[in-house]
Image 1 (cartoon, rainbow, N blue to C red):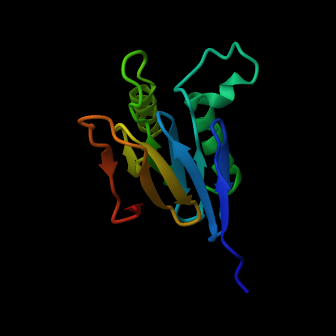
Image 2 (image 1 turned 120 degrees about the vertical axis):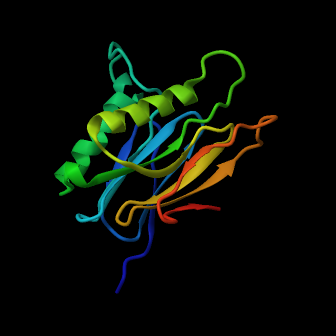
Length: 173
């Protein structure tokens, strides 16, 4: 008898993992970024959800919000579950520009995530980044399948999100 599907919401500052076929990790993103990593051979994956690219680490417990910390948590968690660093592939979502004026966190998060993956030699095989709308992302870590729904009203003259697809494994609904 097959197990029922399980949905796990990944909150800001979290990383979650799964290797069960029915598990779906979800996140709602604005300027935040979610990195979804997957090992096809081990059939294990995970998602993180970070608010800011990096931090100085001076606030106790604040490092959980930062991409620099959560990317390491995600990679190490996958390695502990049988993934191989050489086989990891990534999909990135989020990084929208939601505020006019002031600091634009979304593009900084996108630049950090892309640079981190390049520095670590992890190929970016799909996802959707930028734009001016939030996203609801669903990710099945045992298969690497992902899909998203853009949410919220677009800003006037929205910049289209930068979309990367890998043979149809990112669905837009």
